[in-house]
Length: 252
Ligand code: PGA
Image (tube, rainbow, N blue to C red; front, side, top):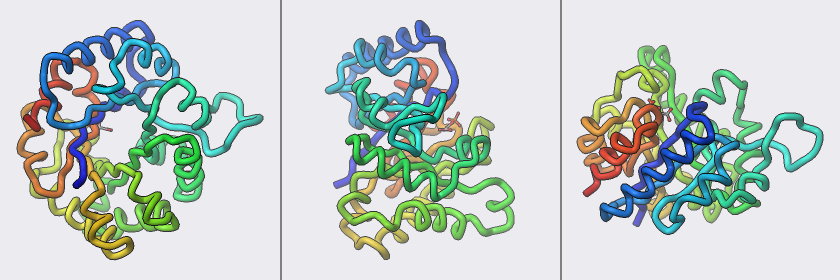
């Protein structure tokens, strides 16, 4: 059966020292509760190795927020999947809406990134989601389906089964405006149906689909209680151990 997962996405926040402190706090807090879900923190590249050194990897997973679409070479400023893996990280967020919107990521670049992540034994947390205009004009199911089909449906069932998906309606990210639990459930069930059509019910039932977008301790329990919501990808509320743990423990 699929796993419940709560993953933090720190984005471009915290200095190295602050980030190591936050990771230590989360790690310590996890030692005191029996978390009923897998817990992951995805942190800036500069923090990965240092954070890896202070966390208990049996309790807290570590991921990057992106990786390059090339293996190695003359790509100044880029960080490859093998570099990420060499820090001890085992996850990577791919296709976050901020990467698509501000850095021009397309299905083609994402295919390369997914392949390189797999080559380096990184589990992609692959993000999909519509913008406000698409929500309002009713095209959101088509948009999300196309994001999945175009970047992922060339994969074998075996590789697809290694992915974590995150549905993040762009209009809910960092806006304080959360999708209702029913809106999340509706889309998650749709996504699971799209996966089932291509890979069959078993693969679909085993795929963890996280919700992201202004998830906080006060709304996490209701959203996670929905049958097709398997946890969350958490931005703002992951920047303090207390609020992040308030979401982690929504599964307890
Ligand atoms: P948010 O971000 O929780 O701050 O809305 C979620 C995300 O972008 O992953």
